[in-house]
Length: 424
Image 1 (tube, rainbow, N blue to C red):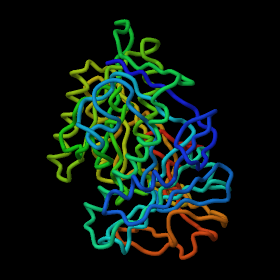
Image 2 (cartoon, rainbow, N blue to C red):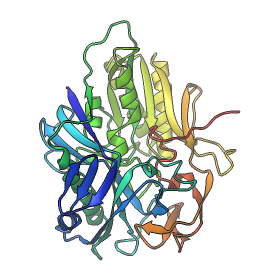
Image 3 (cartoon, helix red, strand yellow):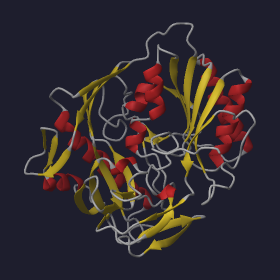
């Protein structure tokens, strides 16, 4: 597979009478985009706003962040399985807009069945802004209202499709023209002396692959599939510190391993694990299968990432243990659950073999967010503790004391963040 990824840099976004890209400015016909979204009868309202870095603005109820993209050549469409047939992607040419995002936001409570919801916030200025990578992008916020009375499943599908359709609609402005930057991703043959390295993702229920849940059995992916939209975020009902679709398409470990491919290592592929299972037998099977695939690829080293959850930490550590026992040197990428002061137990389960760990920060640390002049996405803030939804703040414009995990991607556990933990 050979993926040519063309990047068009965007420095500003304006509403206009035509959707186009001109002189690093994205112009959007707001009414045309709104009409596209409201073609779905399961959405009754779609507000579209632009939020810029440095603005005294707070985006709440963030469900997903998506990069505007379009498929220029190769089989299928962008985000296959959602916006087109589930054809294998990772080949051909894809164009993307950088410096700008589509932020999907919706207040789900009282519009559908009350279930767990992971509240995610983006502050565009103040102390919270330094921790979220999305405070540094121009964000096109889709503040959506689902139609009342629909099921959770129908609601979530409508919201997901709306975000992806908007990203493709905007990405089409880059269908022609010469990108500002070209990146080519191709594995090819490396020197036999270089160590063979695999990336293993313990993805839990963190998304959908080609339009469907990942399932229990681990599978092998070409890394180009990750970078070309095969994996999409679908988990806003659970984790506030979710791996949004933009992060999935720009997984830092995949990009870093590609950067070192044929230089210091031989990148042999990706093993992705879906549902971690609940029983000991399911977890043993999951870990054994993942390591079997890594060995089948000839891996001598592994970087193992963990997407979220307490139960899936067991899978993470079991995979690490089995890799090391099988002669595969392993490094883990994690976030910590170390309490507000950082002095609590960081992980719920560990193994002695886990002796090379990269920490992406402590998601339980408390942060005080200052007042903001503008709030987009809803009127109140929620939080979830032990599956119980409670009110965090009735005034999201005011001061808010919250945990780092509620600042979207602040402690992102696959490395798309700006902080880390250090041992003293």
